[in-house]
Amino acid sequence: MGRGFVNWSGSLSFTPGEYAEPADEDEVRALVRRAREAGTTVRPVGSGHSSSPLVRTDGILLSLDRLAGVIADDGELATAWAGTKLKALGEGLYDAGLAMDNLGDVDYQSIAGATATGTHGTGLGFGNLSTQVTGVRLVTGTGETVDVSAEHNSDLLPAARLSLGALGVVTRVTLDVQPRYELRRRSWCAHVDWTLDHLAELQHTNRNMDFYWYPRSDQTQIRVMNRVDRAPDERVWQPRLVPGEAFPGEPGEVRVGPTHRTIPRHRELRFEEIEYMLPAEAFAACFAEVRRRIRQRHRRVVGWRVLVRSIAADDIWLSNAYGRPTVTIACLQNTSLPYEEYFRDMEAVFRHYGGRPHWGKKHWLTARDLRPLYPRWDDFQAVRRRLDPDGVFLSRDLARLLEEA
Amino acid sequence: MAQIGARTWVVPGGRVPFPGHGREPEFGSFDQLCVLNATDQEAELSLDFYYEDAEPVGPYRILVGARRIRHVRVNDLIDPEAVRLDRPYGCVLRSPVPVVVQFLRQDTRLPGVVALTGAMAYPG
Image (cartoon, rainbow over all chains, first blue to last red; front, side, top):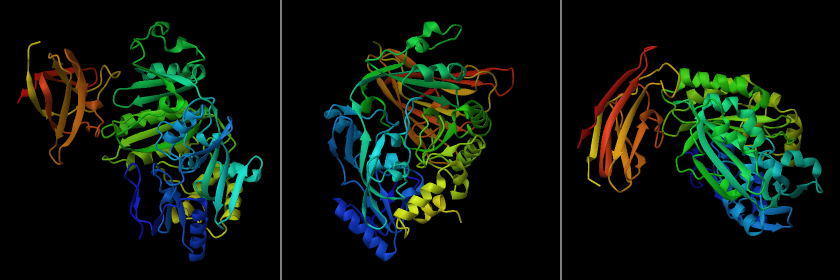
């Protein structure tokens, strides 16, 4: 038996048949071939931040922890080992004078795990982290190594940039990177009515913008980030230019630093989370219904915030921002309090408005529900069956997600 | 500065009224702890919540600056977990320096009515 696994939030725990930490790609290939011959499954795991059961297996749980570090860069592209944690990746790129263009809210994840699940930040002009992937190296279900990029096996790229670990074990990730720069983050509180009234303005005049809504006060915390070397239109956050509104004053927090230290926030408090990606045009009505239901049905037990972010459209087959500008709504709950009734009720609202679930967070959708949401679903499955003909990576949980009964 | 207050305070009769009526946050129902720290040291308060049917939950950490007050709505506490609304609780507050603690309840369960209750917490 392998050692027990517990995810970041603590709601997913299991003991795999074997726990492996390969030190190089040869060991990964050997593990996959052995699993294929034995008819067992392999699930790659990064930092274990996801709370959906993507990594659960009674076969081999393959940790990427020993495959870590930046391998090379040429100033525009950087290649890192798949298990490199985002925090370390940010530091490594920074030392080389580089930066990823956008990041998520936390930086615990590995680069392969984050991009395999569609981890995202916020900003109308930014896709999820998978859109920064220009190439990967995969160890497929047959134990072969396949490089995927615009130059090599390019037909696989729209599938491989976000693949749930279903096409193979990603061992290396190549990213589109930028010369490093600094961001200024500002945050302040305002009533939700003010925030919704100014949302489009805030989104369009800031590089990155998101907000938390607090269901027990109807207050919001707004966060905006802009490059220090490119002055944004600051009118939207200057209190004196918000006529007739009791504005809370100057921004409560101002911080300046490089992207990898400014965008993610460190969080000690663990939580469960459901997040859905909505067509941008559906956000206003969906959020109104989310707000109404939480206030009427859930806030006796729910005190945690609701996070709203935006993502640019992309062309990655399993990306939940595929083909449409997206606004996301995430509901959080303390790990020590019940979440399922709350999240299921929220999921019903999200689905009504055409939402797609975050792959790494709580949801209850199966392949039958998911297929209509993704125009290139069948193309992804065809690639998956080609690269993993024996289903080495198709655990029971993956089968429920990807194979219609 | 004079050492005013006590290091331990108790609120045995907590229960955040639920629901509320009117625009929030001004007119929502809430329980609130109002803390005065008249000393020259920052106070890191520790709160533990006690229930009828479950083990205590805490500590909740709250900072009150030197020579400052802080009003904390129980509704807004989430770390380590949100305090459930409409559930009886008792709260024990501990401070490394003497502070003064007042309890305030605003009850807007009845539409068009704002009921306020204010009481000093019990100093231990």
